[in-house]
Length: 268
Image (cartoon, one colour):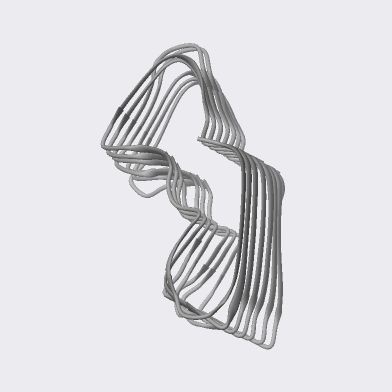
């Protein structure tokens, strides 16, 4: 999909579970298949005011109700869900949904996600994000078994505002990989220039700029690599934090065997 769902004008309200562009690929299950979903210059907004409430600019790139087995899935996002405008409010909605949403798990699957210039906000006024994630999980699934997951994020979920920025019970970016168990698999996550805020003031209340890179219950017999550079930083005048973090854990899981590599540079 290219050059679709873009809006320019006065004020825009996206609500009631609506979206400018829905899911790119949606299925009940995927077995022995190859899935490629690519979006370029999609669901971008240039308006005087934007209010997203229980809606979104773009849905999931690849949504599967069942398991993804023996399948290769590639998702590439370029220039998606970006916002230019005056004031921006995101309340119980997202700018961009999951890149890969495999509800019943990944089994002997290969998943690659490459996202650049996605979900950025450049506002002359204030920005408020509340009771939501500005960007949903990148890979959201149940168990990851005998699979390979590779995620590359560059210039994603950044906010540049001329006014006050408030993040309340929310995150700019939800988990990169959110799952239950990871068994005999490889998970590789790279984040560069992600979830940063440049504004005169920032107020964080029971939230964070970025959530965990990998959030799982248990990890066994697997290799995990998380590289984060220029992530979850604030450039501005006044910072106020209440029961919050700039960046949550890189890896949040019970590890029962495997290999973990975590490298952080200019984070938080």
